[in-house]
Length: 97
Image (cartoon, rainbow, N blue to C red; front, side, top):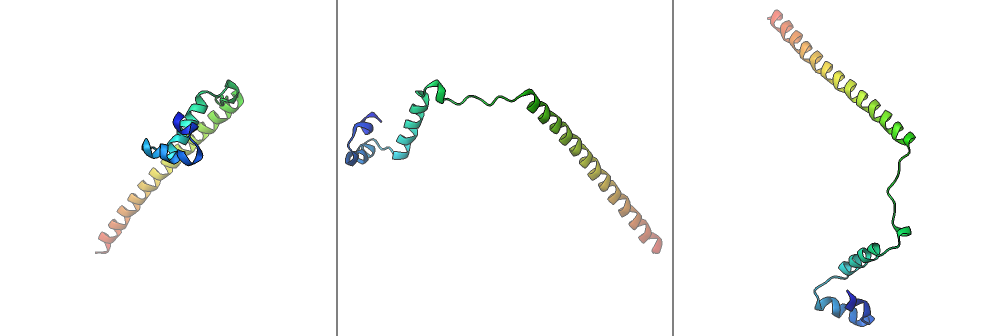
C-alpha cells in the first residue's frame, strides 16, 4: 500500500497489477488504517440509553409479549371452534343419511 501511496498517478495501476490487488482493496485498507489511527475525538462512542428510555422499551416489550400471548390464545380458540364446527357438520350429514 505504501508503494501505491507514493506512486505517480499514471503508475498506480501498474503497482496494483504487479501485486494482483484491486483498487477497492487499497481503499478498504486505507479506511481501516485511518480508523485505527484516528484521534479519540473522532471515534464514535457507544450509544448510551437513559433509564427512562430503557424503562419505556421494557414496558413496550412487556405489552408486545402480552399482545402476542393473546393472539396465540385467540388463534388456538379459533382452531378449536373450527374443529368443533367440522364435527357438527359431519354429525348433521350423518343424521341426514
